Image (cartoon, rainbow, N blue to C red):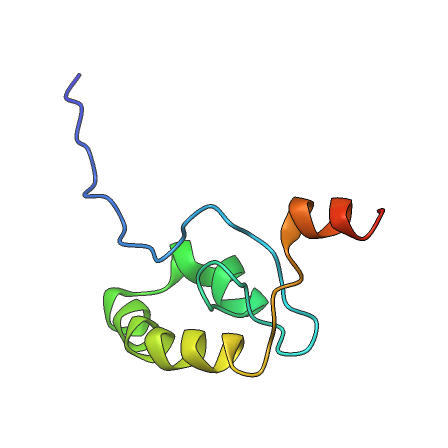
Length: 79
């Protein structure tokens, strides 16, 4: 039996999978739910098209948002 390995699929995933409720984009990779779900089935051209949009999406995703300090912020607020 011959083992044939498929080349790995390029993905923007950084394993920070949290969907921003205001934009419906993942805060880790800036893809929407549909793109995430269909990524494995998309062709190379479709994935490349999405990849070209991600830097602008990521910039807009964080625009106007402020960090609240994470764990340190919660502790300082008594939370």
